[in-house]
Length: 116
Ligand code: 5GP
Ligand code: ZN
Image 1 (cartoon, helix red, strand yellow):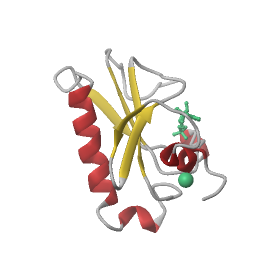
Image 2: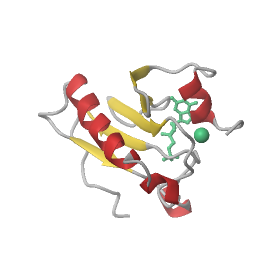
Image 3: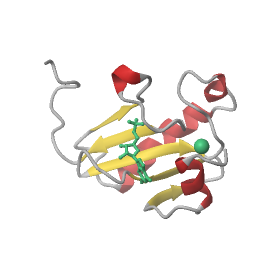
Image 4: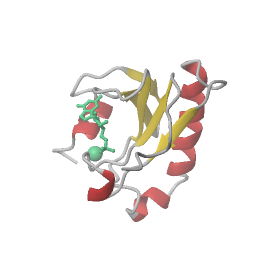
C-alpha cells in the first residue's frame, strides 16, 4: 500500500529501529513505547488488521508469533514475561491500519486492562 506508515517502515522508506527483518515478517521498536520493551511485529506484505482474511493465509500469524517469541528472547524478557496483543476497532484504539502485534515487557505490566 502506497500510503501506509508500516509498509514504508518495512521498505525502509521511513526510519525505525528494526530488531528483526525476515522474508515475511519485520519487527521494530514502537515510536512511543508503553513499556521498556515495546516492539511491533508486522507482516511485510500489507494486511489491514486481524479481521482481514489475508491474516489467515500463508501461516502469517504463526510466523508473527514465532518472531515475537524470538525477539522476546533477544530482548532478555523471555524469563520475566511479556504481553502480546492486537488492537482492533475504536474501542481498542486501533490507530495504524497495517496488522501489527504488540510485544510489551521489561517491567511488571499490571492488570491486562484498566478497570475504570
Ligand atoms: P495501535 O493503537 O494501532 O495498535 O498501535 C499503533 C502503534 O504504532 C502505537 O503504539 C504507535 O506508537 C506506533 N507508531 C505509530 N506510528 C509509528 C511510526 O512511525 N514508527 C513507529 N516505530 N511506531 C509508530
Ligand atoms: Zn501497510
